[in-house]
Image (cartoon, rainbow, N blue to C red; front, side, top):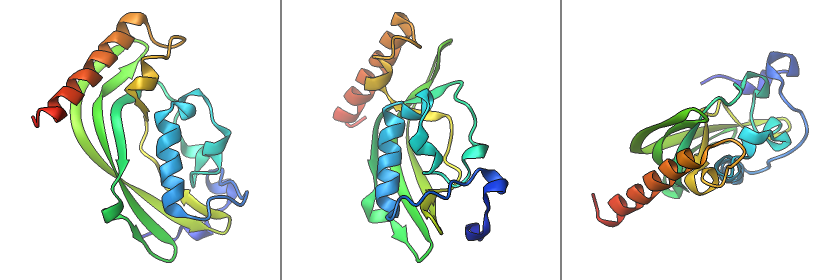
Length: 165
């Protein structure tokens, strides 16, 4: 455990704007905005949602997902730290150059810490995790054929889950 309460703006670009009074709501909104590709397109919201926005990489690619669900039974909140698990149905990694299918179920536990300005996500996993339904409409970045491949991967993922496979 590291004491994040002593970080300063010079350490990592910490935004001291008061925000995010509740850790689970922060993660829920983070996952939703990420899934809508907001972070890949540029987001002012992200700057005050993460502990060290200056350490975030630029998006060269993204993880295409079918679904993301907060696992409420696994949430743990202490006085200044919270752990919020999220289950993703991953389709694979995508970029403007192609799609690498890697279907899997992934549980990522977000570490959230309380700062003097509110709760912040600590070191979120990158690249972005974008819902396939959003990626398949992303005409300015992805070709028609790439969007079709992602759409087919999402359909196959849903069929596997529906069939219990």
